[in-house]
Length: 428
Image 1 (cartoon, rainbow, N blue to C red):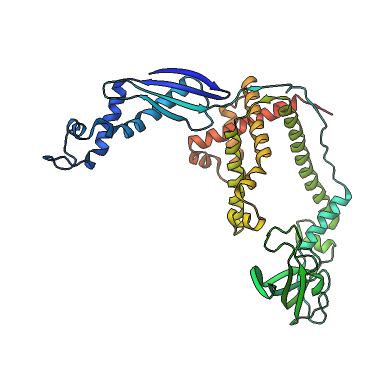
Image 2 (cartoon, rainbow, N blue to C red):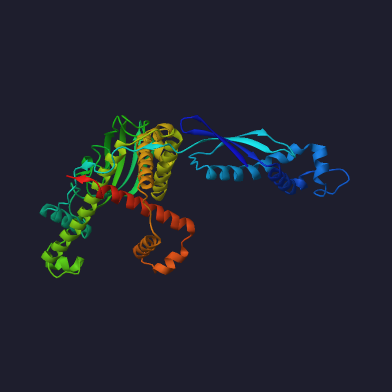
């Protein structure tokens, strides 16, 4: 197989690949075996006519498509591997010469990974993020835990007031006509939370259990659904129940109930310890982000648009997955936001470009600095992952496929590259 390579434009190469006639003949024969039963030749049972007879009736071109599909992908993969070419998109294939007894010649035009021109990446100066936990942080965390341990108490002897949870049925009308999405049943609305349209919650204050309340509001001008934006609306609301949170007393008994500690002071000391560990982890991550951002900023790379589009695909896919877990999908979300898919994707363009550039720069530094992961390091990483999943390390490793191990190793190398950059940075 002969290969000629031409740079046709920035980050785009064209390979002219010449495949031996014998190899192409293999493809033609495989195509014949696959398609023989499709042809009805007089004097032969279906599928029993020799290839030469079929070609005489229909022309050898009837076998070209599958022969090309057999031969070209293998030849292309071999060509890019031998010539150290890193495509980032599918190739455009164009057949230049084809025929029995002839070498197959085709071109493959493809966008390739861009070259990265590294700037300063060792010794970059950034402000180190410090981990700080104050008494106020501890008290706020304690308040959150107290809130989680509150119990809901039904109110029988008074109307709705701010801070209550009103259990309501409601239906919205615009010009006397109900609208889609404006109806709900047994909805738990925290009064004063601001979750509903401005003015909605205030009009329920003073209502008693069993009351029917007419709530008149106007949707904000910038509301996501353009059909509702700025429209005066009447909601007919039924107050079915009034509840409020009864908070527990914060004392030693509370500490015993929610933890393994005997006193409130011991419990608060443990909260401080955990908050400090979390703050240190967050500070470490933010410091790393600052170093990476500076290193990437110093590098120069011309990123092909196709790489940015692929990254946007990944971002949108992840978002769609999260929406589906919440019982929604991307199409419904876009309708609610009043956006089309094109404008939705465009908002991720800058983020996607930044993420692609970061990936390329880290890959380049890994290459320049010869950063790799040993088998021992890989085993330790697999063991750590198994422990995170609370599984036996040996059983966990046996279940891993080669591509799983490659993925873990790649992530480990990225981790080591980031550690290298931070270790070599000037942290002020």
